[in-house]
Length: 235
Image (cartoon, rainbow, N blue to C red):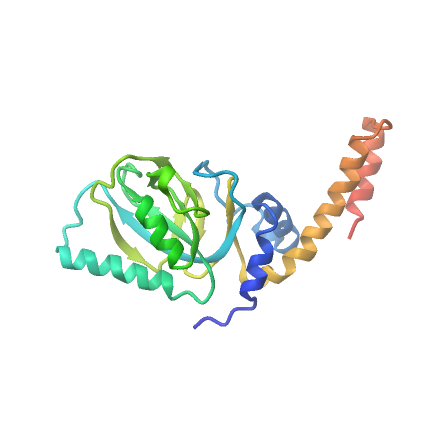
């Protein structure tokens, strides 16, 4: 079992901030990660009002455009093995599921039943380039960032799980820490988790200097130059 340098409480604490704020703080904590590690294409967010999610990644791949070519028993074993894999996590999870079809979303893995199943297994939500359906009947509080809505599950089946996947430009490996909300998702390096709250505080204090000046009657472009310099000195 992985020896994590953080606790479930540390992950829960990060849910109080939105994903752009997490990305801002990561620029301070792991500056070499500034250009990657987050999603770069838009999602359909089923419920934009839900709070951010943050948990250990449970990764997998699916296909739906054609039958798997396996026996029914093998397909069922893959599905049950996936459930065991999600449940076995030592902390709450975020599912990152890559639809491998040439036309992702031909069939939906996510609907009324699977949102309920995965919520019960400890998952807070899913980040996928595939589809969702049963929007009005999905499990309350289960966040879904999906590529699209599709009415059918077609031939959807689990291909593999536990490997590194890539969804909308974000690579995520087994037990990566994933933070997500209506803006998208980002992977947080394990050793950065406990450093983020202090970095977030620094980001907020820097922005406060600028925002306060922008809202004041004394605002001017010339004055802004001085304020930006002062903001850079906030530590």
